[in-house]
Length: 483
Image (cartoon, rainbow, N blue to C red; front, side, top):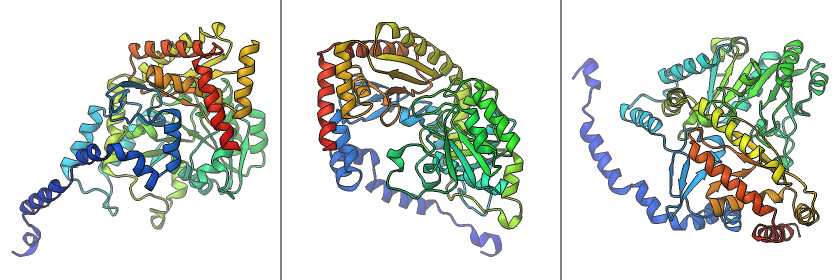
């Protein structure tokens, strides 16, 4: 063979031999079946022993085996309704067939993935479709996760403005790598990891006067904010985000909307900022863009910002990430956008969310511990607070003295054990239970949620009772930990 033909080799026999060798030795489902009852021991020995202890202590070590849509199934095949959705990753539910088929098609196609000295067709298509949803922005930078998007936003804002300051809000959460942790207002996460990134300052959420005071120096590169704060499900007043955008424009600061949890339909709009008709300079997306399978993040921004960073050929790769534009991640993102549209999941999020908030809010007059229900779409917070009656007040104060926010465990644990609902507290020492279900939930699921919360909240008002017996156990554990 000569010339081009010298490079043409029939690889089929080689591939068949390699496949047979691997297949004979590697069956992932068989590995899981053989080792599933050792998962606790494996994690204790090689991973996070403290997480294993937490799950056993609160009774969450049920051994989930399977996920289908908004449901989880444990080792006994009991069905649970997932209101945690992997911290928002599974907006389409688990194992959506469209996402799976898209990923299978990529694997079957044997694309030349991540050549690096080449450009990706799928990345171009996903970028095009994202910008079609947010047409006032122009460019996309892909990353692997939400925290990488925040890191990129910090770099891009500083590089584009020549300034160093970054402003964030109290109770805000933006990630746990060093740059994003520097913008996360939670001592529980920050403790022991300082010093963090310099020139990062916190201001009160929903306070335009404080924001303007911080921006007046004209040294602030970016103001980053969650349109609805994940830690607490805190919703701003109607004038806050429009006012913040105007102030950023006035002082030359880049306005960054962290939509990593709120974006892609979660709040009943494609972006949460749409509730307030705001057009940020930069939008951060991740979590549900993955379809629940392949991590991915996207930073959408104005062309003027992007061009300040990638301004010459010798700076074409001045910022990047090795796996960021991989074909599986891009395909997952494309399929996710298609499912959101074809199944009208944004509309479903708004409808179901409005129903749940309305139904639970109607319970407030009946339950003195229930203070407020708030949310946008399917991002919902159920807030509890001090009661007025003597018996309840005494029990509440005992729990609070042992560990602030402990009462919410008296809601989440019975929801899990007695009603097969998985949910979470909305932050460290929080009095708010958070719901973040898949956008695919049905009216039947809404009824399941409403009835379960009603029964658990009613039980929390019976003193003495089973719920408060649980509270004593939790309180004793908290006291032992602090001793």
